[in-house]
Length: 125
Image 1: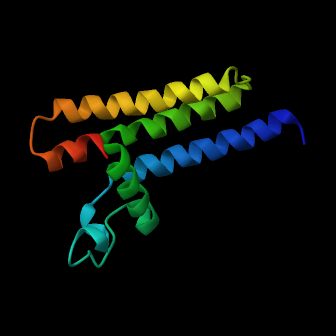
Image 2 (image 1 turned 90 degrees about the vertical axis):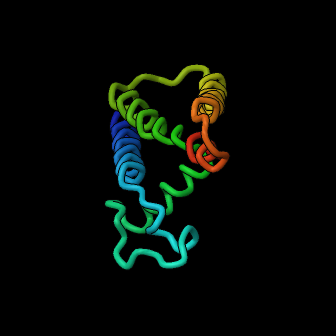
């Protein structure tokens, strides 16, 4: 298979991940999961289903509102694969992405001047 076709397949996969994560995060409801409440919703309110509810819960609990960066990164990677750009200095970019998540989570925790529970909700663990 041509390298261009393989890049298009990767581009579609990244685009699908971006859409799934964005839909999961946008329609997140903590009442969908049994671990956050004593009586879970009978019908899942997350538009991505129960899998989307678990994805959003995991992302929000670890990253807080910084989780909204993930769909945009996946979309950028998708566009990058579609245009056929070759990645350069991958380790440097991966390190920069991790630093971006940490800095954004810390900033959001500092901005939300409320109870500790709200700070964790904003900035994640």
